Image 1: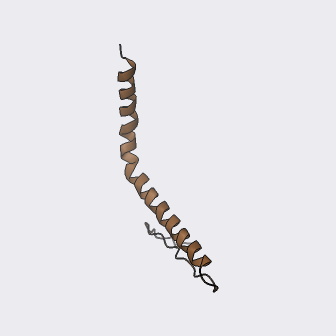
Image 2: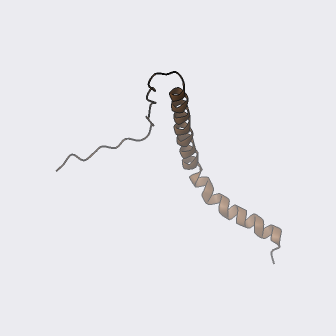
Image 3: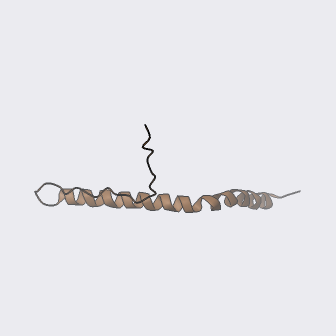
Length: 72
């Protein structure tokens, strides 16, 4: 029969194979989150500087666009 080491390796392979398929989506999501956090950090920094009104931070996140159905 199988020992603990063989079962552990088998379980790791079973978990790793599906995870590889989702890796690009996970990395893309992490990049978007990092961009949002960076933008928010910059906005907070700009808000704290000077006595004038805060500059609005850009809130544009690139992504896919879809056409809207214009039929009534």
